[in-house]
Amino acid sequence: MLKYNRTNVAHFGKLENKFLITLFSFALLSFIGFLDYITGSEVSFLLAYLIPIFLISFYNKSEKTLLTINAIFAAIIWFIVDLYTQEYSNLFNPIWNAFVRLSIFLIIGFLVLNLKEKYKRVLKLNEELQKLNEEKNKFIGVAAHDLRNPIGAIFSFADLLLTDNNISKLDSKSIKMLTYIKELSQDSLELLRNLLDMSKIESGKIELSLKFQNYIEFTSKLIFFNLLIANKKDISIKLETTYEELYFNFDEHYLSEVINNLLTNAIKFSHKKSNIRICISVTEKNMVKTEIIDEGQGIQEDEQEKLFNYFQKTSTQPTDGEKSSGLGLAIVKKIIIEHKGSLGVKSKIGKGSNFYFELAK
Image (tube, rainbow, N blue to C red; front, side):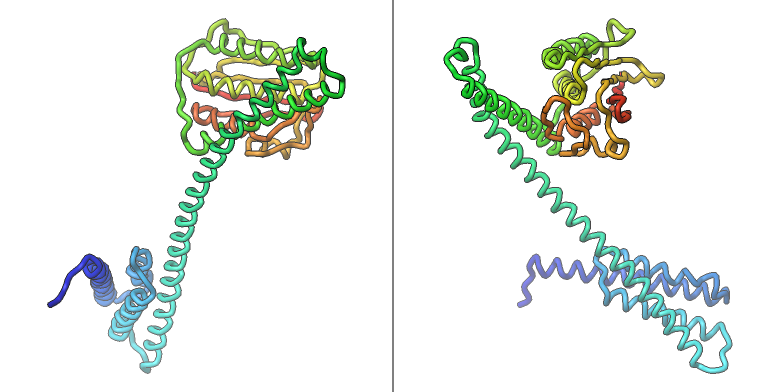
């Protein structure tokens, strides 16, 4: 007794599809040959014979055998039409023409088929890379999260030992070592925070909580917080705007990360006793434009395009030995894009930098 199973049905369906597509191709070629015959114009139908070959080449389940069969049939149809519509002194010429056409059909068909297969492989590799990227983001997120607590404890203990109550009991060497421990742990915490943000953004887990709020008041608070860092280098931060209030929708948490990153960078790469300006305006396209302008060292023109890539650093160095992970600006770019905004930079060596972004009002 003949047994049926899913595998047999699947193979039958596959063969049936190939049979139908071949039948359709044969019918189309026969129709093209008929038109060629009744018009008697070979030139007008020269490319028409290639149409079924292209269809077979782009067919999802196509293979070389199926393509070869259709190419042979196309060459035969054209040979018959040629034989009845053209006058030849001998049979060799139409046979030779048919062979040349068959070669052209096969070359073009195999070329398209090969390109299609390569395209499939590229898509498959892209899917695999996407999966690897997701796994990488998960790993980075877990590792950064697990490391943050112990490193945070190291920072807290070092900070506690350096308080006024304890510092008098320590010698200068111990104070110096504890200061190094505190600074290194603080830098590590900053790096871990950036890695966590990068992991969230890359994995698509970032969800904006947009609220209609006063952007001027929001920015003023951030300037106040960053002044504590800027004062160590005698750097002033001033807000310049013609607006007392400016309301629109934005995510307070993520946008504070944007401004803090840009302000921190401006402080790092500015000279002591210099000025940083934050200019807020509304453009003709009703976009809120924020500019963080410093009087620092500036950035070389050929390095500016790479600034917003991950782990990208420039030849310009911080002015007071500060460190940079190369992640901040990449995160800034992702957050601004999530806000449907745009950003850029203008900078000249020795004349400072202007990092700006625009958000819809």
